[in-house]
Length: 154
Image (tube, rainbow, N blue to C red; front, top):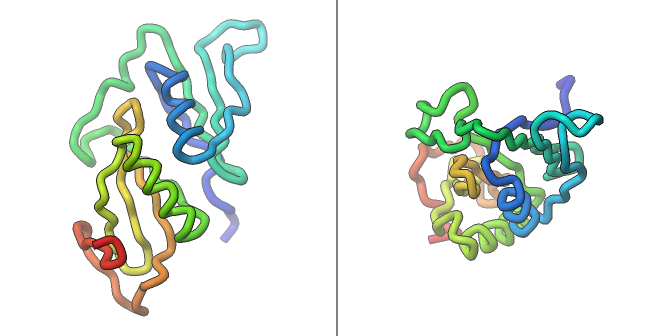
């Protein structure tokens, strides 16, 4: 492959302070930039939240823009439907899961897709997101449909 993964995802938030705190608290993310988009102090507020070795959320807060309020059912959300993050290990996945449940952002359900485990959550702006990790209990050649509960989290 010619790529290492996703560099960043551009998003809109109505409350950057709340969103920053959520990603810092749950994922140990780091805010590496926060302020006006343009060097002269003009433009919308832009926050760059580092969520991985080379992965960032570039989040804009734009006065009068209500796009962050629009949440519709899956596959009705527009061009970007949801965001999936990759946990480093099963141990970090479990810590993220604990933190998300503690914050009320996720329930206890973990999906077993076969080679991957998946946990869905909603961030403070209501964006549906997912945390994935390689399934240590995977059976070669077995894949499961959405809604298959992971036995390790029954």
